[in-house]
Image: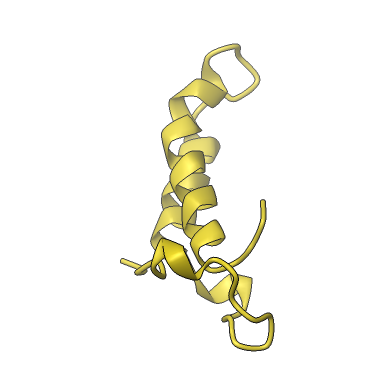
Length: 67
């Protein structure tokens, strides 16, 4: 499982932070699987995946990426 950086370090220098494709891999995988296997065109489809989407956004933000 990918380990997010301490929330106090959200102002990471752009040269020092890892590439976005290399962080939050577990969170991204779970988000993508949820979106793939749920009908997101229905009203509650996105709600089923909201937990995973929020976790992924939070993880990316911890590495200094604003989503």
